Image 1 (cartoon, rainbow, N blue to C red):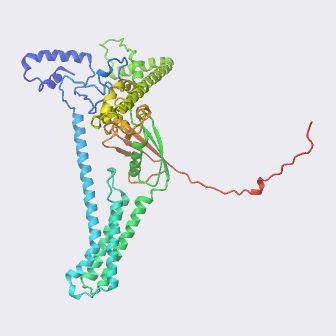
Image 2: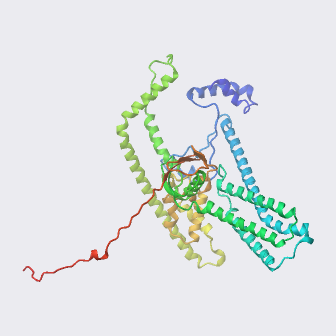
Image 3: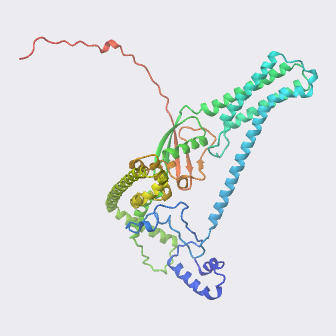
Length: 528
């Protein structure tokens, strides 16, 4: 970073002191640029997450082990500005706003189109029955008993069709898919063509000729309602029943930690299969914890930190920079390979030490929680002797006993790298819930000792605003044997591979029940 570009970044921030402090700021920036040549020209501000973490700075003063996630929970302010954004951030924010507006417009357009088509379907039979009374009432023949019975049939069939359409189509949307649902679009086009053809026939044969046979008109409307009911049955088969039979086995692997699950799916398109996988992902996969992946990275950085590369030719060498960088990387790789023989011992002892610390912190946590719950029982016995107005509610009881277990819980969560998954407010709410339902200490600790499913944690930690489906083929095509696609979010990806369930051939083998019978003969003489 040169001096002129650095000074241009400060021009709007220190405008009132340009004359007296300009030379001092230039010298300080020049001194910083000499020590950090690789610093980018654009400043970035790392802010704290919105949810309050359990571990604050004051809570870990007595702990000697440094937090591996200090970069994610520390605010770093650069010299340019406290609220600075790079060009990439501005482009990303603009793209997110455009995507959200496009998704909302498409969703409302689809809903509007469905409502218009539904009104057209339900008002058409009623219009068929009402138009003759409005246009040529004096020419119509009287409607007998059979005709009046058809009115009841039309009314109940329309009511059944209304409830069936509401149950099948007007459900809350589970997700926004990138492409249109092919079967649903085909059914909508089929219904539209069907209603339009009925209107054309009605206009040519009934409206133009002003048919006097009103019973025939009513039967024509009844046939329309019957056909709509059959189309709804076809929709149930295509949208619901077709995908129930398992045809494919999909393997879902998370790209960061290799967590893997297997599911059986029916005949679905790629986008519908991706939606089914994401719904099961939030319930089956443990929460994604990037802090657990930092151990290997820090270990590799520690091994390479002791390696230094010297330029023996001096700074005046005219060798290309690319060749120098390539030689440095080769030298570091070679040095790391020579130290490979001792790295497995360090890994073994590091993992053993980590397991020992986890068991130690777990034992302290279990004892602290059991003492706290024992104190709760003692408080409950004392509150039974008090007046009704002096009884403490579960929220106050949780706040009263939480400090006795807070330190042990803080240390355990920090050792197992779960401190960013649980805030102090969520822990107190869970404690109040356990007190209200008279749960044991083991039940309270289960969600902290064992990594639970993704939905167990707060939405701020697991909810991805948007998933990206990456596929080599069209997402509206069906699953096939060997199909592979990716579900990508901000932090990781889900790699999905598809295998067809094989055809199973079974044969029958008959076993005669008499073949299992045998005779036991005993000798009368025995040995002495």
